Image (cartoon, rainbow, N blue to C red; front, top):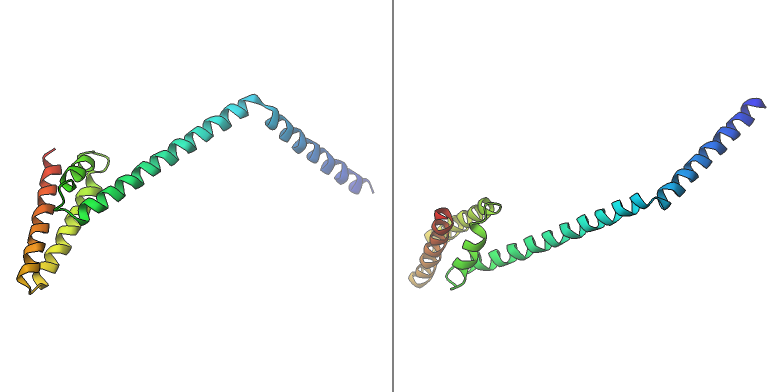
Length: 132
């Protein structure tokens, strides 16, 4: 009987300690400051992710149509940023290789000319970001 009573008392004390801890953490103003800070950090991170997503979409448009007038400017804008240089350059190199492969398989002279122009524009973009 003493063992059962002791277990019940220990369980009750543990429950009260947990409840007290919960109340203290809820009412602690430092915790509110930390929560506000955490919310700001999460918000900043989401804004950063949104900006990177927009950058990738702009790059995708520019790389998929490299002969467009603004493509070189867009690629240079992001490709010269040291944080994104490797990603942009790697993307360009892969696009060049794919386009050159399509060029080798193409029989039509008019389509070959379009592909040659695209390869030249992509190589020019690579040179532009390498020179910066």
